[in-house]
Length: 192
Ligand SMILES: [Zn+2]
Image (cartoon, rainbow, N blue to C red; front, side):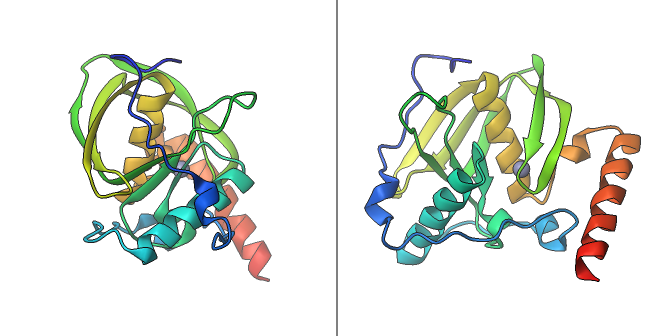
């Protein structure tokens, strides 16, 4: 789906610039308590943050996924990576640092969502159809973007992560309890 208001600003950031330093990091899985942590704003975009971003891209592309929040690799910082390019198209990596929703539409839309922290589980989530988000790019410059379609859904899903919210929180209690139970059992089995 296309974005509203012309082409969204894409950060022209090449993940290959960091390839020597990139590391695959383990993605936290439900019911890991760290996923419920509230992430801290990034005060300064330094080498440490650039490392986190590089690791996030490596881990996201490896999974593979279209969006990742830093807390999903265990780093409680307000950093989101995303790539919504279709498989056959060139990569289109985007970074959102300290993203904030400035506006959401009254119009709602339903998309099927999944999460790298809740593997192989999908559910229909209703969210505002359009959003306006402000954030810092990797150079620390303030940016704004208007999003709709899958882009709007993905931004809201990832910003939720920064606030300790998972997409299953938007489902019915019955569905949420069922998936929680399944993943809790699996993690106990893995620990045995
Ligand atoms: Zn997620």
